[in-house]
Amino acid sequence: MPSLTSADWSAVRLTLELAAVSTAILLLVGTPVAWWLARTGSRWKGVVGAVVALPLVLPPTVIGFYLLVAMGPSGPLGRLTAALGLGLLPFSFAGLVVGSVIYSLPFVVQPLANAFEAIGRRPLEVAATLRAGPWDSFFNVALPLARPGFVTATILGFAHTVGEFGVVLMIGGNIPDRTRVVSVAIYDHVEALEYAEAHWLAGGMLAFSFVVLLVLYGRRRQAGGGLG
Amino acid sequence: MADEMPRREQPSSGPQRAASVVAGEPRARRPVSQGEDARDEARPDEHRIRARFDVAFPGFRLDVDLELPGRGVTALFGHSGSGKTTLLRCVAGLEAGARGRLVVNGECWQDDARRIQVPTHRRALGYVFQEASLFPHLSVRRNLEFGLRRIAAAARRVQLEQAVALLGIEALLERMPERLSGGERQRVGMARALLTSPRILLMDEPLAALDHKRKQEILPYLERLHDELDIPVLYVSHSPDEVVRLADHVVMLGEGRVMAAGELHATMARLDLPTAFTEDAGVVVDGTVAAHDDHDHLTRLDFPGGAVWVQRQPVVLGRRLRFRIHARDVSLADHRVEGTSIVNLIEVTVKEVVGADSPAHVLVGLDAGGSALIARITRRSSAQLALRPGRRMWAQIKSVALLG
Image (cartoon, rainbow over all chains, first blue to last red; front, side, top):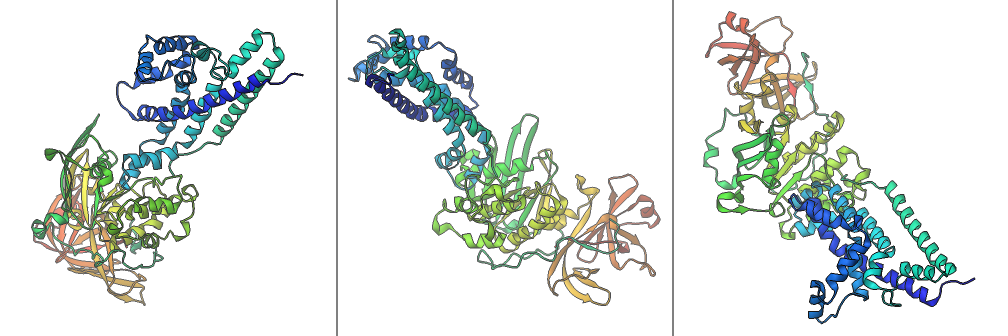
């Protein structure tokens, strides 16, 4: 009975790497965006919120297509990366990271924004009356209180990036060790009628996703919070 | 509440006296006074709070211009929606839309004319919220240290051990806030605020979320803060009992405006109060325990111009006790009535007679030789007794409410 080939293992490793790097960047980028969305009274809030949520409804091919154009030699992003001496992003790991970050953005920003909103203003007012400046309050009060939101955002961002297919195919292609992630590998196996190999990878993805969601919903049931 | 015997609201098992937390004399209760004395005018800015604010919300506007003493407890009193909490938030700098000017004991915290707006975290204030609002992710000790660690060591005038002892929370230090009762949380919240060594303590109805029993549990601690710390307190409350028990100075707010403000005894003795105080009118008197009668189980409290006998109090001679005499518990006679069950008879001079909250009644302002009294009697009685300013009368006091 065939099991995973070394090429498949490489795809698994690449997938996990991509998900880890993308999640780290997503948390860095998503936290300030979520903070702003949770606390602003600006009329741009609706616009920004809608843009962040776009990947939820757009077909991945649409996102992939526009990214491909933008990162290509005549696209604005492509010109920028070329001018900076970074070369072009399509069909590279870095390109996949950019695509993943955009693709998974709502899965990180929305739980974070909900968590920040749930904290309310009171704990930050309390912190201010206890001499904590805005940054101090953010790091020592808001972040710890939003911890459940960060756990949810990390899990969802990671899992969603692992499950990415359309965007990867559009901008990453299928280059072993560089852009060939698990979802693409499964596609290849099926194309080649290698159902046994496809089963190993697909079954692994299924189990992974189930466990992730089980952890998530198990946590949510016992979640609590608020100021004491 | 027509009890003939006085009642005492403070349980005798109050907290034991702790060493004074801040160097300096424990604050003495001010003597009964006839109003804002001239000394106030001469005081420099270091000992006063000047607050002028204008802030508008949909359907509500706060517009106040106040000058408050920079020591003792000032109660901001009014019904819900009167703007008292908003005023407190303005002082703390938590209302971003508030325009105005604020100087606290010589420090300017806001002056729009000079574009000064000190952010909340740079104001040396302590704030006790209505719900204690402890940080749920930190233990009681870490909550207490939160503010303490953020001020310079040289500026720390209140030490952790002192605040903990003052509020009786030694046993709670390692607990998480969720494991505390409402009263315990509120005490931790007060200690936490004190540990920032504030120049002013702002308290927003710290007792409102508590039931009667918890209130009685915390009031003695509040009085200790009052007596042992030389920190001015702005105390928001809608409870007349709390106000007369704790305050030295009172600001009455209604619909975002100041209805009356002044020294507690003088303000309470005013007959023209526009608030619900008219129905509940009465004076506040600070008496001294002068004698005990063990045979009849009575204690005599002397005050300028008179004395009252109350139920035997377990306190030493010379101790000050604040009490309240409601206008409805005072009746008048044109001679010293013999053969009455009423123990407390005081000779008084009529100062003025004004209409009361009901058309059938009048309020009579009385001078008991240095202390003010108010009697609420029927208009008919007033006419029959021919009450007019200057007339000597006997006040019969049916009940005295001790406030601790």
